[in-house]
Image 1 (spheres, helix red, strand yellow):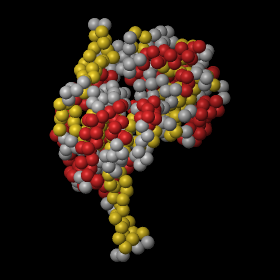
Image 2 (cartoon, protein in one colour):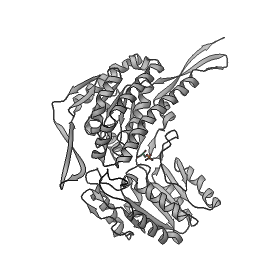
Image 3 (spheres, protein in one colour):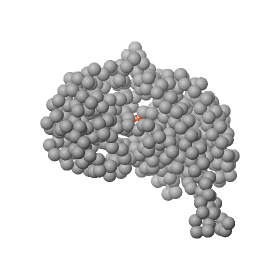
Image 4 (tube, protein in one colour):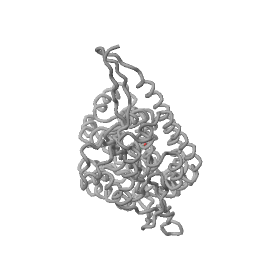
Length: 483
Ligand code: G3H
């Protein structure tokens, strides 16, 4: 792709491009699937100028448009997007190696999210249009847009997690710049025309490039909201070198270290099934993946042997193989990073508890079940974001809850047990540490109408269909005295 979208124009890029390389090897060689513009500060600032014109200090066509008309544009976009589903899915499969069925599911979930956002907006609009009478003041509460938004999504859900901020931001009347993900960007090529045709000029602007393309826009002081979903490391890099304007609102989805506590009374068949899918779906590359297990010592060997069997049964290989679960990892250097984490744990007394665990061939990493993990190991404390399952043994459940409390992250947790009293005793301590406690089930974001956020270093602001509408708007009042 040589084009990018700014101010309603699909502009041809004549500068340098960046090759997009699949994590799949073809004939033993890395496979180049295409290229994208390597845009610079100048294009970032062009996008800022375009988004500012669309906003026009709140007087632009988009922020002043009637809600029903904005909805019509978004619905028109949904139709155009659906027409290029196969192309988008194919590019997603090649670039991030998510299994084909999961890529299709991501696309369909994104369209469903878009339609659910429209429904939620209609409800919100009805609720907001009501008058309130208080102390002799007649007031109407209105939801108003905030101003230009910069959306940046992650590689693991390159379409869905960008759209979970893009769509609510847009529909509330905010013009948007999308900085496409560093990996998982080529799928935006077939969407460029759909965006250009469905929205007025400058309302959606699409930039390709690395993080440096986002920085001039952010530093310009013209962006009202940064919506960033990705790693804490990338978010810190954005903030560290480039102080963000002080009035910038941030909606952030960052690292997590979701814990599973396996009680002595756990139903082991169910626990292992949830543990393995919870930890290894899309190779563990989900913010909601289960990333650390605290297992009662009396059930440890059973847990490890059953997990080992379940892992051995997972089909591995190319992402279009039916039923495949473990696929090549798209982040350059990821296999070495995982090796480093596991080696550090082994040096400090951990062991790999499943045959072939941690073996790798190029970008394909065989899941490692790592037992005897302790808090001194990096694997215990950092988000691995890959197919490694750290397991800690405990004898007193307070050790497990204390570890969750000590974690800098606070997205979700799971409790596995069949004794209702033992499970219930853990719920309150967990509810004050994380934002979703799952009982006898893995962590997950959906259904998308549920609130989705995190505490501590895991998130800022709440996402989900209706909460996101609130995140990208402000309540304003029109108030009159008298009758
Ligand atoms: O990577 C973070 C996603 O929000 C996870 O969503 O639980 O539906 O896979 P999911």
